[in-house]
Length: 439
Image (tube, rainbow, N blue to C red; front, side):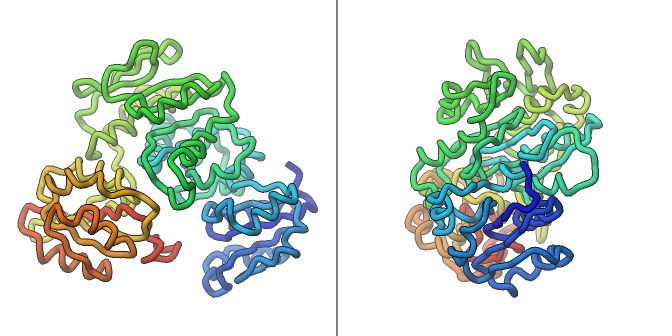
């Protein structure tokens, strides 16, 4: 893609918008940044763009007449397809793309792209660690807060890029073609934006829409919805599962404390799991998916086993915080839908005090009823969705509704006894309680 003298509009600033603005300006584009937030609200991002004097800004508004003169629109993940500016740009046949699509135009190394409803960040980081332990030069980014375009801005040589990819980012892709694509699982999420589960499924499937027979798609053999992608893909398919794989399936499975790699092209290997530090069966799935991805890039077994033994997880995902008065505190704030909360609850055997709530994304919380009744001694709800959650699961244990996270923590500790676990696992987005920099 030639950017010199092209008029580029970046819709939505944030981290990805900053990276695109920097790179496009360096390539000689005429860049305009537009965001409905004001200058004072975007101050931290604007400081990063201060050295780029030629960038123009339309803040606090989206003047259609001015902006529609652009050649290219690069859209931040938070901007939906239904945004008036995007709708008008599409009608006028303007080129509209997401940040990952933009970055892909300039990336020349293999890309491993990870999507799914839950486990994306953990798996992305696992893959990165396995490759680093194999002495490969790796860029790890995407939806985890380090825009893929930042790889283009870096002066470091990279051999492979590993990117977490969200359904929002996949809305505006046309040519994005990862060497390896992973779809970990699919459960209802972001239905407030995508409208239906089928639309959400289609959006996730765009991660492999441009793959060819020389590329690889990795699917969860235990997820019936994910398995349906196999009939649509042109790429080579591997599966991972917690039980023996079905006849004709190649990939990795878990049995009696070991991961077994069983493939024609990648060989047969096994890995012990007795030193894994992460809780939950879902992390076994994440490890299996990661193992497959790195084997495609010829990662040494020693590097994989080392990562299995040492990987500590990612911040805010079942993250142990501290023990106070013989009560353990865990931060699971990355659990932003009910299915993620369900997996977290399954990871504990001790009595739980659960703090939930935030902004509803159109999810149903009734699926949590059995686990709430079985494992949660006290449920504390907060945020915009607290009334909805209370109607769905509040009758299944002792339940309280509070106003703030501070109140929730205070009440949780009051209700706790020695040997309990206090778990913050919201099951919602946090947009009603924190700004973007504090999510």
